[in-house]
Image 1: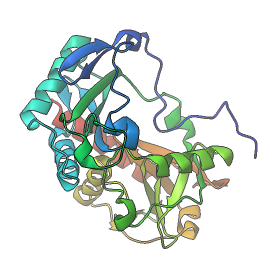
Image 2: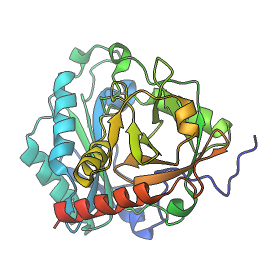
Image 3: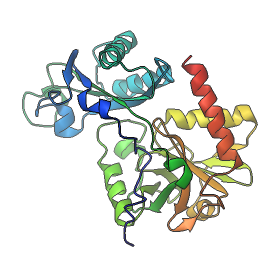
Length: 310
């Protein structure tokens, strides 16, 4: 299937903003112009993907769901014995410093990255990282492209799967993203925008970049959570459904269920909720994956973000 480059947008497609040409990036406590912001080739993140990251959004001068993101970051780092070198207040100050240097208060996306740091030799063992962690904070003026809500995302089911927790637990928001990169490449080769990944048992799980939901007869379904990313937005959507009286189920379901869905959407910090227009060439619902449940959730989530960042 030829790839439609006119449609080629993903859940991370952002509007162009010329201000991003001169952003200041935080590297281990020092702010540097983006052209000068660098880490060592001996850094464990560059060399091995040994690190954790968070994606966050800044609205009205406040980070949305900051505590939840810090829970995930610190839990992941603790699980792999990676000492961040500062507490939550220190991370908050680093974020404040970077935002202030860039004059950023609203519609900002941040990628906060922590690695095990610079190694003394180019080998695997964590003990070779002896100088402490590396922390990098990239902030951009960033809004999702306005057209994506109207046309939705096209998914292709890919052979790359979400693995078992004892191979690489997807709940780690780690720098080691090759599994997802391969899925992304497979989707592109199939002429789609993103890859729909199954779990080791063949049940529908996530895409290469986001968590996945369907709506069937007024019920919202998502995966069990056993193999998916520990998504902050995913959990907020589940909580919204419960508070709004929308039946929501974390369960195993197959492609047959997904193909026959009335609505479908993806969740992620950057794009919030993005409709899925088609899966494997099959149109979802009658309105590009959108519907009354999707809109109700999207409106409730926007209100939740507003309340959290006032």
